Length: 291
Image (cartoon, rainbow, N blue to C red; front, side, top):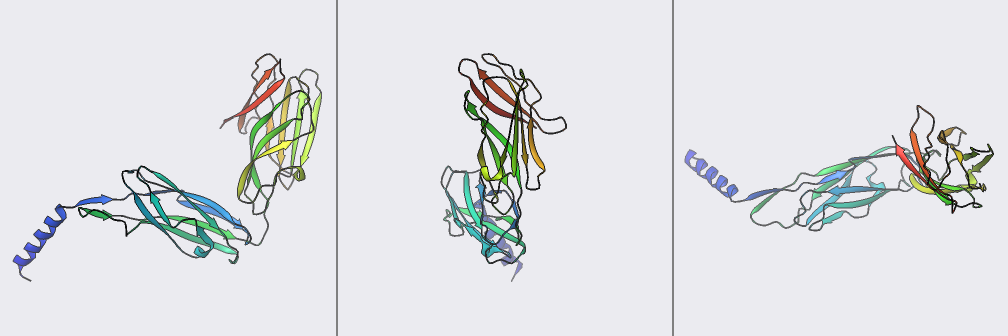
C-alpha cells in the first residue's frame, strides 16, 4: 500500500471518529467481596448485592454471569438487570445452596457487564468495562454454634407487668441457635432489694443460621415503680459471657428523670436513657450507642 493511500485512510478514520461522541457506562457494586464460612450442605445462605450508577438520565441494562468453582451452587434472582430512567440503585438478591458440594473452599465471580444488545444512537460509541464480585465460601460437615449480641430496647413497663427486653442475635453459626443463657439482675437503689432471673436457651428465640433477628426476651420479674440498677449478661454455648449491660449510675425518680447506665471501663460503653413518669409508672428505655 502506498504512503499516500495509507495517509488518506488514516485521515478518513480520524474524521469518522470525530463525528461520534463516546459514552462510558459506569457501574458500581457493593460489597465487592462476600465471604461466608462453614456452610453445611443443607444450608441456604441468602445475600444481596447493590448495583449503583451516577448517571440516571436514561435506561441501562446489565447482564450478570457466574464463573469459577462452585458457581453451580449460586442462584441469582435475576441475571438481567434494568435501571429505569431516574434510578441509581438496584438490589440483586442471590442464594448459596451447596447441597451437592463436597467440603472445601470455593471462589465464584459474578461478572457484571453492559448488555451488548442495548440500543445506542448512531452518534455514540459505547465504551463499557465490566465489574465483578468475589464470593468466597467454605463448605463443612461440622455443626458450628456461635453468634453475637447487640442490646435492643426495653419494653414499656407498668407496675405489675413482667419485665421484658429486646436484643439482636446475629447467628454466625451454621445451625439455628440463640444465646445459651441470659442472666438479669435488677437492684432497687433505695431498699437494696434484688430481683434475679436466668432465661435459658429453650425459652429464647432460635434464629436461623447466617442471619439475625430482633428478639424479645421475657422474664417473670414484676418490679414495682422505683429506681433500679440493671445488669444483663448473655452467655454462649460454652457458658462464657459474650455481652453484658451493667448499671453504674443511679436511677432517680421524678416526673421526667434521665439516668445513665453503662458497662465496665475498658469495654464498649452504652448509655440508656430511662424516662420515669411518676403518674403512670411508664418506663421507656432507649439505648444510645457510643463507640
